[in-house]
Length: 373
Ligand code: SF4
Image (cartoon, rainbow, N blue to C red; front, top):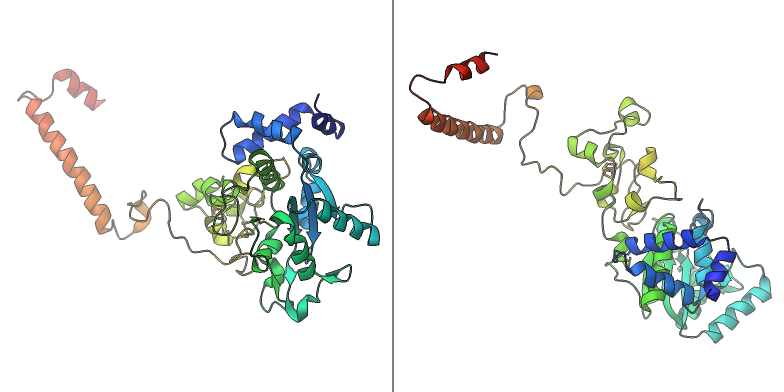
């Protein structure tokens, strides 16, 4: 048995759980099913990349969501796949001891380590609003980024500034990409992000030795390539025009679409409606709360929760005739009349053809009988 595999089993991850997680990550990355063996092999045999994890302006919710997922596999796998040399929340050492391991790891793994950042970076007043070990967040970030192979930001704060950057932004908070311009940066936004998105990104890096394809906001396309709205279980209600009108009322209890309560799903790129959270199949919309657009820098905390996003492509297209005309009161609109006219014309044409085929006396007796029944 390979050493890494033994380590994983020792950490309480069964072989079955391990393969299951590799298959999930393979599916999430949009890779063929057969690739899961290559990914498993890369995780088992790979070189434990050194990871330095810095915390700045944040609530530690991203780390908490990773560690407190109900299923132990994700956190165990991540912690066993990498060599986590510095993480202020998790490391046992503190003070000078902790700073020494940060310094030693950066020296020993120069040009090879992954830098993970959680939290926004304050820039006003020379960055004095966040200091660790006597250094401002900007200084620590610049210093650690210098020797990194790539940077992964975890959470919307580190990616784009998050709630700290909302006007009037008293500390001048920004995301990593506003400060570091010369390193590959992979953003895993969310408040918090799904741990599987982070896990799959690390697995991709270990397997292919390069970063995954990113969208214009630096997010892996495999996880942020589709809108939540496209795979939401409430989508049939949206398409049928059934909307929850108030929290706790009958429409909400029926599980209708949450768009009119401010759901940002139609504008939000993320895989929450597919991957869900905590391995129990739950996500905010499934339990009755509208999506707050936490992966979108122009939405999260910038738009009021109850405000509706613009629907650019309503479905079904509003050029379709309404299905139910009874409640209209004023009769069918011109387009509907046109479509019905065409249908009636086609029916009349078909009727004429039938008439030509029928004998002059009309339908046979049996047919008359069937029609009268
Ligand atoms: Fe789901 Fe929100 Fe879209 Fe409605 S608007 S279908 S609740 S994502």
